[in-house]
Image (cartoon, rainbow, N blue to C red):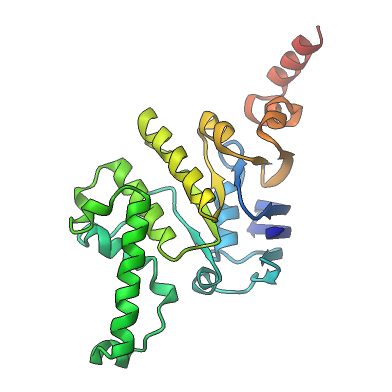
Length: 263
């Protein structure tokens, strides 16, 4: 089953085309990576999918529903969540409060119900706290809930971002360079966490520069270069594809490698 479908997706900025007519099908379940050299359009693609940027052309469908014109919060209510390249936490709020912010698009209580603390609001509040605690447990931060987010290490802050995204039980999780700045041990822990998220039923779409991490974790890989999709297939196929090698290493190196392979 296709969970996310992009058709002819483009984003232009004046004379620059950041994403150029990209088609992509992301099946439900598994880890699917989007890679490419710097400036390939990966983060712009994520911004389009999550609703932070409007496309210049093309369509986005989530589980068969056209969400191209829906706002980011509406997409979140339909089961889409994301993290960002730079850690974006509320430093003076507690770890638990940060996780709770991930549930905001799904809360239904009116302002009056919140002010009056009605029975319905209190029930929703209890459920939200329970879900936020479950998300913290998933990333190994269940004992840090009462601490300020500023007290976390960088690796823990990365995991808290994932917990905040997972608190709403998304069907599709976009991870934008989650391994950036992590040490090797933290990267291994992250890989185990991502696999546990997939095993629990959430599909992961990943942008990442750490090729060892991507190739060891992903079920499929899409490669962008200058905003265009130049490859889609398995990690093993990506390693051997001439267009992928050329995008990362340049035409001369790619030709030399191909010559060596056929010598």
